[in-house]
Image 1 (spheres, rainbow, N blue to C red):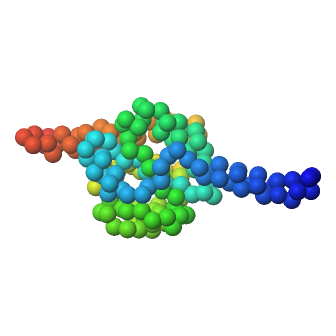
Image 2: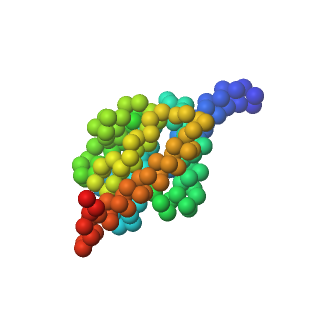
Image 3: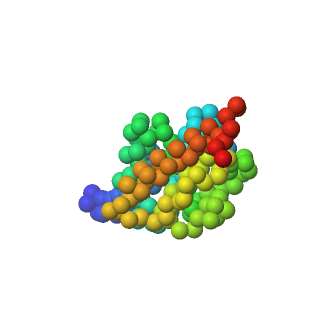
Length: 169
């Protein structure tokens, strides 16, 4: 029995651990065109977290900040939160509805370094400067600041384009 545990226990333990590392409540991007329509209807910006499985900082950002934010209703009510794995060939649709994969989409967005967080409007235009890298002491403040700025920028755009309202000159 001990021999069986030694022979199969470690591989099973490693497989379970590896699965736990990539398992996430934060949804992977599947259809940004659909998310764009949802953004238009709800007035919420789309936050995309670009990550890599080989990036320990990505794991820390996801576990310490993004997963708790996603689970808490407060942030889900303010943002559409998605994740792109820059190492994955998983298929998705971009903001124009074109079929692509996570690797190609990240490359088209100029993202080859992780972790990166970008905030988009419904058409895929960036609302605020991207968050590049990870500074633990300041990350939460930068993240919350970027969230607030992206929400405000999207509201300003919607107000400026609302019927009967002239944009400020």
